[in-house]
Amino acid sequence: MKRIVSVSLGSSKRNHAIETELLGERFRIERIGTDGDWERAIQLICELDGKVDAFGMGGIDLYVYVAGKRYVIRDARKLLRAARVTPMVDGSGLKNTLERRCIQQIQANGWVDLPGKKVLLVSAVDRFGMAEAFVEAGCDMVFGDLIYTIGIPIPLRSLRALRLVGRTVAPIVVNLPFDMLYPTGAKQEEIIPRHSRFYHQADIIAGDFLYIRRYLPERLDGKIIVTNTTTREDQELLRARGVSMLITTTPEMEGRSFGTNVMEALLVCILGKPVQDITPADYLELLERLDFKPGLVRF
Image (tube, rainbow, N blue to C red; front, side, top):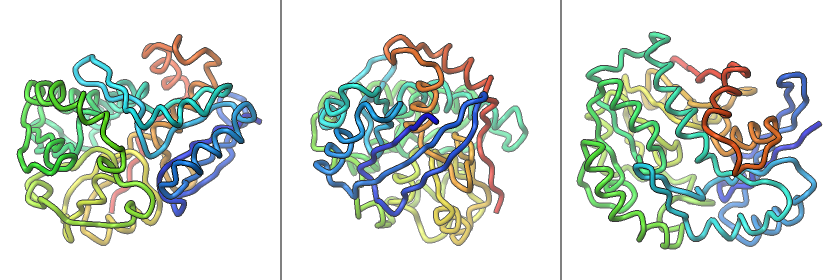
């Protein structure tokens, strides 16, 4: 049995493990949170290095892509260096394929008629493929990168504005301590409603779930959430706040969806190629073979 482990800086309360069969092979998939403890995460990677088939880097991205340019998040290198034998991926290689494909499937499946829908993408620089797919579908966009990452309540309403801000801000932001940019450990349990009018004005709220959750207003009646990884507890939270539909870009496995870092690690394991040799076409072909579909929950 092949083993995939996501070592996450996130809360250990979100830990999960399953065993599944894909394309005739058995896999054990685990997510292990370290509650924001960097040393514990590094120690765990060192202990498992060479003993598992692929690592997912959870709770942090290694790369941010803005309009075709890649920026490396400085703190993520600490985790990457600890994996000397086992390949480690952060999900960024899949976001341009899996998440773009998901938005196209939402329209093709008739789940949501996207043209004209108002979409808040809470952070787009780490989901540029999703951002482009929403624009291509004819949605009225608000990109919340300045609002929710930096705390400046200025919405970005076009890919051009996103590219301009991304190219200006990304080289600075990726060198900041990561804890300043994204909730880790116990902070993932906190909900601090902020700039809620952008949530209320949107028909669809999309992006990283922990980002969405952190600033979640008390009521989101009739809203649609398009995100990555959710637990049963997350689903109950959304139900209680009036959300009408949850769409996850990764498929549901035993009651929850895993993050893109886990899915990319799984695909790397199946492909059996060095990470640097894998192309977007490789991912797309394998996604079709696996028949991975977005998850859908109607409340």
